[in-house]
Image (cartoon, rainbow over all chains, first blue to last red):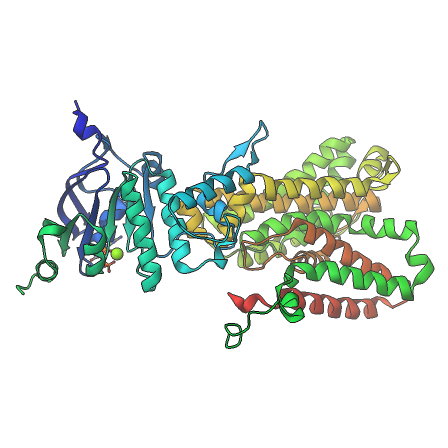
Length: 250
Length: 327
Ligand SMILES: Nc1ncnc2c1ncn2[C@@H]1O[C@H](COP(=O)(O)OP(=O)(O)OP(=O)(O)O)[C@@H](O)[C@H]1O
Ligand SMILES: [Mg+2]
């Protein structure tokens, strides 16, 4: 049924609607993301961006519409279903255990074990973490360092590394740099671009227009639950996006 | 802050001193100091092999309970019911032994009572989302009442020789059986916390529950298991009291809650969850036992012992909790 191209579409959303009782959080949303493509999702506070991310990551179920992952229909009843299908999320507020070493965070909930007694394989986890962190050029003192000893940017780097490691092609990011300073944001953006090089599809929620222009290929705009348009970053302007977000002609 | 940027010389002694993980080291330093103090002041008798062995043997029930308490504190919770669980499980075991005459059925009954108490605590904490402090405070009273009710305040003798050998007076390869129990339980505790996924999940839940949940860890299942284990280690402690004292009474374990918590906290396990030390809890428990032993040797009266012990625990706990502000 699925053609060769649709099989390789990491994410396809078809007519997604989400209602919370009488409140319509998302009117109708369609989107396709190709491998190696970064799509930014922008909109004012309360526009429905996080709701959409939660739908794709299995936390909420859509009221209507279909989600397709790598060309297959997906129905997630909870986040572990989505995770099992290779959908990974990077949260703004760092869903990490900061008293644990970096490698434990990378494997949180999916720890590697060895032997018939299923003993934790700490050295292998540390090794694989170091490898991944090196590949993504995230500079940290050591994979065995305690997470709380890292900077905010390094930590978000680890969260992205974790998502990359487990994602089979699709990474969702909800305001990944909202808590970070300028230099740390730049570093995280580099990491996001590394994901693109590796062929991952990325959906990134951002309030930062400069960031959208720096990292995204396309941008789609939500206004009070309505998808008002999708533009190629190369063919739009800051002013046009602001007008779409606010609904006011500029 | 201001001068670190300027200075690029070799680290000073002060820097080195600062970098020592004091919180984790407190228990070992404390142990060494208290040991040295009693060795000097109580000389000959304190240092005899009999007395030193005795310190470990006396600590056995506390050490066993401490292993459960480490897990409970590691998930950022507390179990105040362990002391009364000791009494209920000890009495239930003694009654079962009297009526069945079978040492292993009796022990299983005791452990089952502990597991049931723990699972009940866990149920209220997970399903009803109540704070562990309140749930276990209530069950502490409830269980103490049940223990009094069970035998109508009467003590129950434990006479079965297999039972008293296995859980109290026996020796194996020249070592008291209670030291073997201590070793086994501590090793199992270390294995569970450091080498099993479960241990990693326990620490993750205590460190950041939401992170654990979004990482697919079954948070409620972890909490249920931890409280069940805590009930069972308290029950095992009760069984060891049965074996060592040759009988059960509702007062067993009465003062143990404070000792266990002191041992675990001094040992470097954080009250706030996410950080735990099995070795620290073991040494903490031995420290408490050694203080007890030394004060008795020094000829202090029971009330004087209580005062000195309380002061020492306060000092040790404040030392080990200091420096937590850095976060
Ligand atoms: N569980 C819920 N129940 C009811 N309404 C909800 C729920 N979750 C979200 N909403 C509503 O849906 C709308 C969209 O919220 P959402 O969090 O998706 O916005 P957002 O675009 O992420 O905003 P922000 O930029 O502030 O993060 C809001 O009006 C919000 O009140
Ligand atoms: Mg949001």
